[in-house]
Length: 78
Image 1 (cartoon, rainbow, N blue to C red):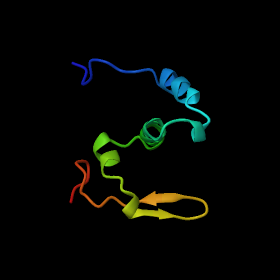
Image 2: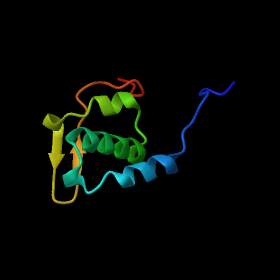
Image 3: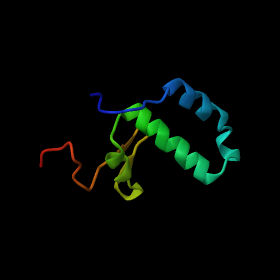
Image 4: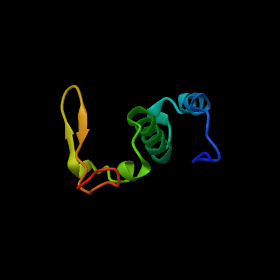
């Protein structure tokens, strides 16, 4: 049996995200959801990992932003 009974088309999601622009004209909620989906697609992390993202544990540089997870996630053996 397949693990999941339904999948969604990434192209449809991507096309929808393209409509959420310019970013300075959309609501903060829409911008937050857009960023969350882009993080999910770009990092292939589980929802649990995204839940643990916190700006207090964010390290920003000129070329990147790194989040250090403060909680243990399911897929880590610690």
